[in-house]
Image (cartoon, rainbow over all chains, first blue to last red; front, side, top):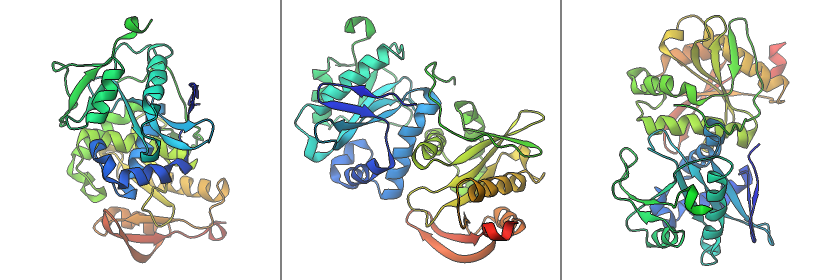
Length: 170
Length: 180
């Protein structure tokens, strides 16, 4: 079973097929350009299934983020570790109407605590497009710092933001 | 590559045939899959693919089980334990309807293993999932898979134009009533 995490305003729960519609709408829009988008529905589905399937391959993956008061699906947060990633990555995406409320920040804090606590991961980075000012700001608010010496995922061009390690989180 | 220590399992029924054991795909299959998708043989199913694309395929295959409750199994040779490939039930976005699909590693070809596995997957779809019909979606040039579809009793029905992959042949399997 994929675990469920609770924060003050959010429930991070296992992704479900119903989440695909808002997920696909996000990836159809230009807002997804920093996440390899826009993607057509077939490719978005594959991406969605990939981050869900990773749970069984790695023991971690993506959560769907739900706003608890409304029950609305507002995005995704999770830990990604594809074959060509040198180390696990913490990533997020938030739907357009849910932006500006600190949702990603709140979700990522919970995911990071889970990654260091329950999973015992030792490092976490975020791979961010150099033009993605919004995500860079969030990474900085999360205490992550640019690590230009970190190895990059094969065939990808991005900045690496390294999160404070588990010892700094105590 | 090793699996995480925090084990999350997906609910996948374990089927068996005379020579094969069905199980969920795992990280241990990655190198074999990457080798298959690096080879020319994979051209008939959209290859060759780079390692990161193979990773996506492997993970998406597992994700399909989480999302649909069915999917493709990894199949092992019961006698040797060797990983033989994937066979199963597949219905991603962009498919016209659920299909029975397969791909085998080189070493597993030519022994009727795909046939044996596809028959079991089809029986499972009809008996346990209640499917009333099934297709196999095959790229026009894939003579080997077309021949297998015929051996399974399926017949060519129409061409389906997939949004990304283009023309695909729809082969219709005999329904559950014809399987008795």
